[in-house]
Amino acid sequence: MTVAPLLDTDVVARHALAHDASHYLLLPEAVASPTDEAAVVAMLAEATRARRPLTFRSGGTSLSGQGQSESVLADVRTHFRRVEVLDRGERVRVGPGATLRQVNAHLLRHMRRLGPDPASEVACTIGGVIANNSSGMAAGIAENSYRTLESLRFVLPSGTVVDTGLEGADARLRREEPELHEGLLRLMRQVRDDAEAARVIRERFALKNTMGYGINSLLDFDTPAEVLAHLVVGSEGTLAFVSSAVFRTVPIQKHISTGLIVLPSLQAATAALPDVVGAGFATAELMDARSLTVAQQLAGAPQEILGIEVDSHAALLVEHRADEEETLAQKSADAAALADSLGLAAPFEMTTDGPRRTAMWTTRKGLYAAVAGARPAGSTALLEDVVVPVPELEATCQGLQGLFDRHGYDESVIFGHAKDGNIHFLLNERLGESQARLEAFTEDMAELVL
Ligand SMILES: Cc1cc2nc3c(=O)[nH]c(=O)nc-3n(C[C@H](O)[C@H](O)[C@H](O)COP(=O)(O)OP(=O)(O)OC[C@H]3O[C@@H](n4cnc5c(N)ncnc54)[C@H](O)[C@@H]3O)c2cc1C
Image (tube, rainbow, N blue to C red):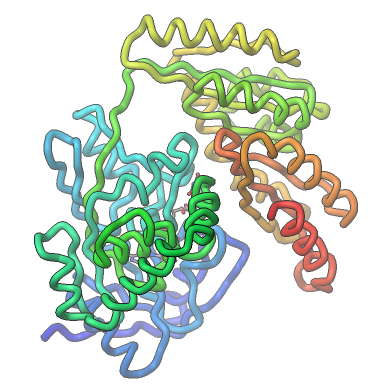
């Protein structure tokens, strides 16, 4: 029997894993680095016996503190990095510690990639991408972790290993975890027999919604084992340890052009969105005036951004992708015609030039760290992540700006995946002082968005 790895209580080891990319900081009592699935099973058994919470931490790029703990923290990045390309890259079996960039590097020679494309792909890992149901700049809800997962191997807190890639997985779950199996069946029946519940679930998950558990799985899948695997997606490590996954990959289109649509205001940019989305761009990344100002200070920022005399401008970073050169040329021409009709504040061009495209994307991917880094000394940058239907984004952004003013949050920033109605905003707050302002803002924000 494998024994649980030794818990390391060394202060340096604990501090090294204490942070993630959020503003929270929890110092774990102990850390450990299990080397294989059996070691995780042993850790879970020990945690259950000692009634001691166990949290998994992988790439540590989460934005809401879900990779932190004041109890035991298990580093599951170091020892789970296997990547096995299947069917000429159409599928890939991956360990939870492999980063997205590593997996995509294996897939590149087959001109394939993973569906989820978070801006953190250089550091985030498969375990976190599954547990957060990551999406990204192009993935939306069609190519996110939930939709592109083919099968999942995971360990329940009881130590039971479920592998939906194996034949008879559901029968095995029924045999080994009868109560869980029956409970899942009951929940499936409950939502399927309730038309209003099913409607609300469908409506909520038609958006890029990662709030709570992915209960759309109760409608989308027909066996408790498949439902459970898809509940693990987005469960932030609370339901199971992800031990291995098989993903269906997506093709990399050979011909790509990228451009920056610069508009005079955030309102103009969000008002243009329904047309931009209707034009079928693969991405439409929104950057408000403050984002553009900060982006201009980044090393290697592209001329498209450096050339803007930023006042109240906003921009949409758009991209077209195609298999054929002629198709891309047509799409780029259509994009230019659309841009002309939008009342642009700067010249627009879709470019296929590699270095220029890379500069635009590197700047976009560096935006969160740069904007957070530009906060006033002594304050904390608080990131929020909201989603609304695309046609409502204009009113939502206006409402948010009104709330920033009303609550005195100067220099707040709005950016994000506007194609999917999903934006991030950053507030600078002095957390040592009263929380009253933040609480009042949060109440108003919830009212506005929900
Ligand atoms: C600059 C930046 C840009 C980002 N852009 C995006 C974006 O565009 N789209 C997006 O969706 N997200 C984005 N994120 C958020 C984050 O990077 C992703 O959600 C990412 O998938 C987290 O992966 P990770 O390996 O860092 O996970 P961690 O932060 O280490 O962990 C995430 C969660 O997964 C759990 N977990 C980790 N491994 C396992 C495992 N093996 N089994 C079970 N649970 C596990 C942890 O307990 C935790 O709850 C961004 C973050 C940053 C800093």
